[in-house]
Image 1: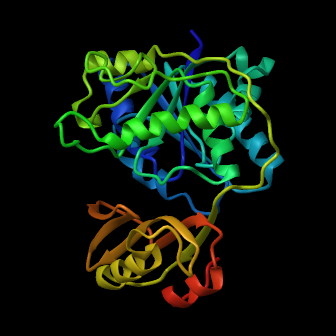
Image 2: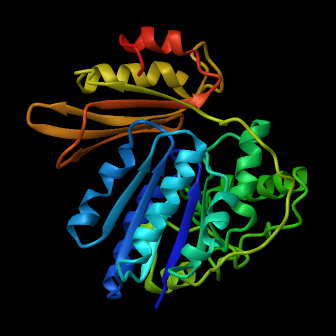
Amino acid sequence: MAAKVDLITGFLGSGKTTFIQTYARYLMRQGQKVGIIENDYGSVNVDMMLLQDLEKEGAVTEMVIGGDLSCYRRRFRTKLITMGMQNLDRVLVEPSGVFDVDEFFDAMYEDTISNLCGIGSVISIVDVSMTYPLDHDAAYLLVSEVADAGIVLLSHAGKGKDGIRDRRADETVRYLNRAMQQFGCGRRFVEQYDQKTSGYGKDVLLKDWNSLTDADFERIREASFREFDHVKLQTEQAFQTLYYMNLGRGREKLMSAAAELLGQGSEENRYGRILRIKGFFREGEKWYELNATRTGLNIRELSEGQDVLIVIGEHLDAKAIDERIGARHI
């Protein structure tokens, strides 16, 4: 039987890798053989390192990285073929955070790949903590990610004053509808929260991922995809990424730099609109992951890592960021 391929989309920092860790473990508990393809246009793939535990648990992992767009497309197709030949039940594809979903469908409909794999579910992760509205290019990419999604999962939502939901989720769903109208997409989501479905209609799920049940995962697995047209644009990469290797910085210095670069939640500062800072650092014999956004900073211990820091955002002043970090980006 051909492997089903699920596409998990979402902006940088939306929570794709965290969701994949949870979803893959559910699938493996069901006795399924799982493969994961991690994609990134950049030269360093931090998220791949976070999937190493899944590999130890039996998942097959592959990485597509670097090169120009045509090279990236070729490598992505090669990995799909490789996965399709390994007798897997489910393949989870995590693209970069600036991925146009049309790339996925174009690959999956090619004869060589379609004989080995079939489209499973298109799952879009949308971060309610982002500041909306987005810039034009970013809004277009968001529409590309949600227009054909079988299900949208809202991430980074806390408990609201009513104890049920974060009101930013309401605002996010309304913005999704406005953005789709902006780019000529006929899809619309239900804007009224429904406690029975834990979301907005059947297509938008709002639930803490730690409390997802097998029934929730089944709903996600069987969500399939939709087919909605929208205006197609040839955009430049909406986000910039700066990589810093072998900094040798400890917790205090990295936290201080992250807080200043992010502007303590301000929308714009002299460094540009920084959306996320992530990476790994070492203290003594232990490795830690750093993950910082305008809404908070988290550090957690890992079994292994790599001395790397990544700054992601829009309209970045690379020279000013280099000076604050005290190193030149690669």
